[in-house]
Length: 158
Image (cartoon, rainbow, N blue to C red; front, side, top):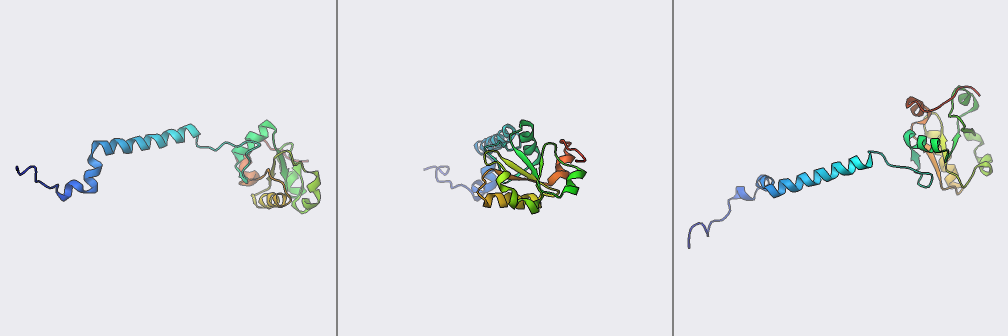
């Protein structure tokens, strides 16, 4: 028997570094990285939202898509003096303090997006409606300042 046949692999040949030097391993890793990049590129980096697929919290970009399609009702839960400073065109003002008494005026067949200054009152309003059995309600993340920063439509005055 030759010495080559009885030779045992050295510890270096079984090390993690040796594993990663193998061409098949390198190609496998490269393939996984390429697959991840393709998935990210194809998804556009953004999740899509529709009137039927409304998340609990909605980004200004996602909300604007629904605004353009006129497929959701926008309800501003700030006070009237805040509303007069600026608001989203065609949105409805229902101050948070009045929301409970106005539940029967809100549609159950159309998604509702609540907006406010920062997102806290709108989150509370969303939760009130969910507690009342509404299923397609959402809160605008970042409030109206984030909406306006992206140059989406807003008006001032009544």
